[in-house]
Image 1: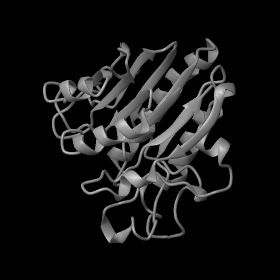
Image 2: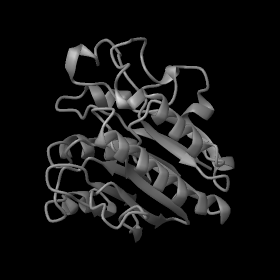
Image 3: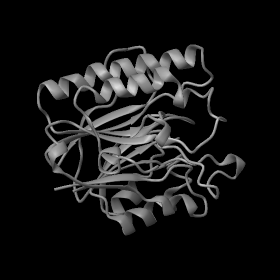
Image 4: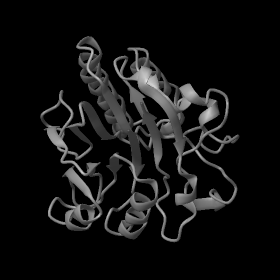
Length: 256
């Protein structure tokens, strides 16, 4: 079973890119973020024509998350992260697919920091950790997939000081990610590629893609019940080179 996470950065604008990738990569489950589409405008017909069932939660202009399943209909479990009924941003969706629970999450960016946006990022992380702990306790097979907006270690960002004040690499951001993983989650890409720089995001500015000046922001965390099934993990870097590409590339895993 192949599971991917892909910050599409506007699903309607990048629809041709998405459909080409679905045909070529044939993932069984796809977690999308940054749809930048309302629920009504989500391109469900094109996605179904490509052979994928879908659940999604859109939001005008920003955010938005979806889960696609090849030749299957994901069963929606929830479309918001528990813990704050006043948080109406479309950043989390959870579904049952082929016997496992899959999330598509889009963690807040947190910039500028310090400030309210960074506080929201850390509070969201705290809610995610509380929810994730229930999966571990109940020994449920789960993939927490999405754009975490955190480069967890120095290995997950190209050598530079230009991001030092950015929320993506702040000690508190990294500590929150580390604390989540410490519940027993397996960071799939880092587990199989422990020592090599592996990026999933290259900013449009400052020629960063041609320079391979990337960051690893997109992660697939596997619960203890699922981690033993991990056999492959990688990033489809070539997607970032396409015309009209998202600034992210799909990260993926294969489970036995």
